[in-house]
Amino acid sequence: MTRIAIVTGSIRPGRQSLDVARWVKSFTDERSDAEFEIVDIADFHLPVWAEGTSPAFAPGGFSEVSQAWAAKMAEYDGYVFVVAEYNHSVTGALKNALDYLSTELNDKAAGFVSYGSAGGARAVEHLRGILSEMQVAHVRNAVLLSLFTDFENFSTFAPTAAPAAAVAPMLDQLVRWARAMELIRAGELAAV
Image 1 (tube, rainbow, N blue to C red):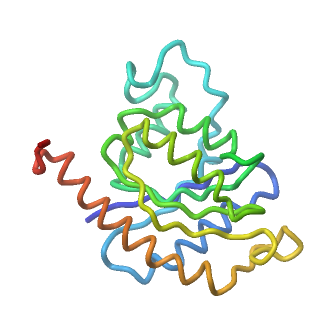
Image 2 (image 1 turned 120 degrees about the vertical axis):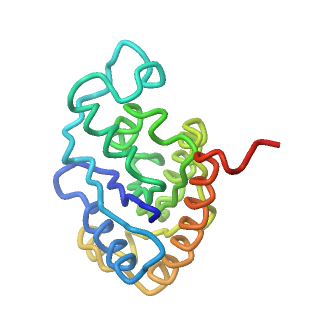
């Protein structure tokens, strides 16, 4: 069965990332085409990445913490990244968590659920560039949540109908792409 992680993108106190991840998970609970699980980066207590060499040269990580994080992310065929937009980009916590990884994400697929003043769109565009470098295929459809309409007083998650309607199309694309990438990893789709 195709396995997809719903990855939180923030670790700060008062964050909305985990609430948004749980909301996404509520949609996946009704699906039978893949298994979905929330992976909260806050649970891994990753220090600022300061290893002596790239994870590409030391797959699986260096410290016990990085090894646990890398092993967890390696379990999945695809990812839904819950992306908070900070200063027109991804959070430092999400970028830091990704810096610990390399081959664990290669030839896998990703989708996005983002939030911010502009729906988190700018953060998603930055994350697409990061994931492209990591050889992750990312789907077009995304779910954009506005701080103005989908959060009461900018702090309580209260999604409206429009982003809710965007979840299933994003997940549909993600599951298809994750399955296609499984074939690539298995060597069943040769390069042309």
